[in-house]
Length: 258
Length: 316
Ligand SMILES: Nc1ncnc2c1ncn2[C@@H]1O[C@H](COP(=O)(O)OP(=O)(O)OP(=O)(O)O)[C@@H](O)[C@H]1O
Ligand SMILES: [Mg+2]
Image 1 (cartoon, each protein chain N blue to C red):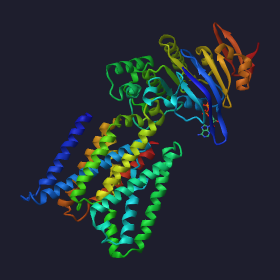
Image 2 (image 1 turned 90 degrees about the horizontal axis):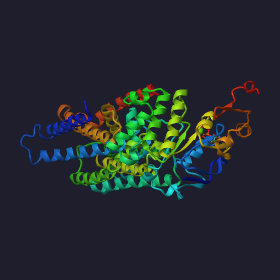
Image 3 (image 1 turned 180 degrees about the vertical axis):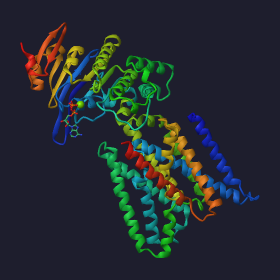
């Protein structure tokens, strides 16, 4: 279980993450939502040790992540950032193979190959597995990176806007896969989302950030409420019940009649 | 063609040129010419491997394929040291005349400089690697300026001694030093080799490397120190030829098209050996010493460098 305690980040005098304390509940999907620049990516980077915090600490099973060996931590927590650039040419399959690095140190055994294959199947990438990443569309590349994280097979998966660049079909497909990872394999997923309807329909819990502070942290249904959303986004958002889902309508206030 | 086949071909070529260089026109001079040629071959193998290795790892940790470790100012420091010694102590002083003393002094100066630089920078928290490069460039330029200034003031006869040191040469390396350099280089490369698998991941970028469990800071520091030590050894042995590393590293990337550093590095090392020994053979037997290897390297390297720059600017 990941616990965040008093985490802050400053750029110069500007506080971009301000004394954040949250518990990531194991076996759930937690969505981070909030306006641009709220500090979601920064928070996720600190939780995943990509960035040093200025104050506070991140605990994994009650142990400060800085005290855990990198090799061990990489088998427990994985992160996919908002953008991924690299200067080496890889095929999709090679990239996904890198997800096994924490276990294989570069020499894939049969089990690793099986995991890679499974991740490619999950992400529907077998047709593309021998293509080079720089020859793919943005969405296809994004799926390849998600497949790599799936192959890494960690208990906790942190994803920063993984639906970037994806069409509706693949967005839904990925959210369903994340749901399966949580429901069937007991994994914990933390995901940054901008489309609050995806957050509403697929996540168990929502943490809302604004100006570096956590302003809401609770069950999805408690946060997907007009009043709470207004506080987060400073705009009127109408919430409608559709079957069992709560759907937010925010495209145009004229559509929100009642 | 498979990569292992390519490596075997390169290995074959290395042996071919080595054999050619050692035994052609030997005329039975087994006691005199053969050992002398042998030492030269050894010097070329050491330098070639050291520079190839240092350049590939340096380019991987800096995520840049047109940089060489000389950007950290080591070559410049070497020339400054030689210039200062000749300027203040004279070219007949023991520190210049005695190759062993000069070697130890040069290697020590370069390694201490690199360590101080890294220590200074890493103590200030985790600096982005570009900051380190920037400081390296500034310090290197500073060293070069002082050298140039002193070279203008120096006695013309003495200046020819300085000039000698400005270009790499395999023609008068000392036998003792070759053995020392061989041992040092082997040890350093073996230490680095244990981290080769980390390098593959480092080329995915810092964040992916950390995500996949690479102890990023310590690997980067270790690799920076290793490349500095290797450059120091090869520069003190034959003079500055780090430009050469740029050529073989990029040729290796193009030729092998792999992300595996075990292949890229081995390939770059073999290419260095082929190029240096082959080049030296051409210089000695075809140009009959009318030009030097370092002139040829700088010429071909320069042309290739321009090609790389044009290619990079097109692709981005
Ligand atoms: N290197 C930096 N230097 C200074 N300020 C920075 C830096 N990186 C981020 N910031 C600032 O920190 C704040 C939080 O950035 P962050 O990337 O965490 O936002 P975010 O919530 O992920 O936004 P988005 O939804 O646009 O991805 C922003 O105001 C941003 O301008
Ligand atoms: Mg962000």
